[in-house]
Amino acid sequence: MNFFLDTNVLVDILRTKGPQKSVDLFDKIPHGSRVYISIITVAELSAGAYRSTRRDAVQETDDLIAQLIVINLNEKIAIEAGKIYAELQNSGKDIQLHDCLIAATARASGFNTIVTRDTDHFMRITNFSAITPEQIIPDDIKKA
Image (tube, rainbow, N blue to C red; front, side):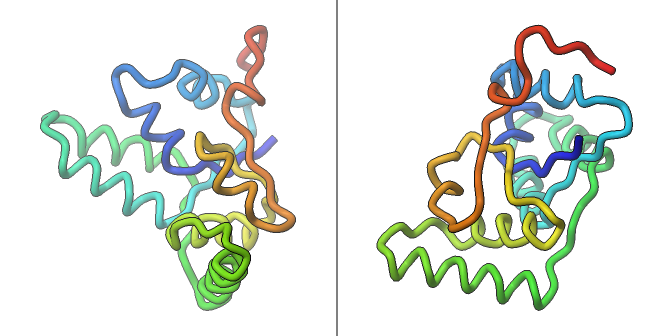
């Protein structure tokens, strides 16, 4: 099982007091699974790390990112993000452009579902779904 994560799930992991299910998700991913993120998430995490007062924030962020598969932007993804953004704006259901870029990156990587804490944002996108870590990591899951 492979996953595409939104930034806020990774922020949970980096925080010393983040929701336990986000940490569980990362710790209990079955062997052979891959975890993907957008390069936009790298930028968002890096911004947070460099703003942090914690001495080890940048190193911890770099270490976490090194364990993930980072998908770069390209023209196709940028166009898809623009399309998503315009459709949402036109329907009055807008979300931020960076979330559209993340969703477009997920789609380009073969994902129609993202693991996020902002399910209400991503559920506005046509033919796209969002789930929380709690929805995919039941209390009784064992690490493979």
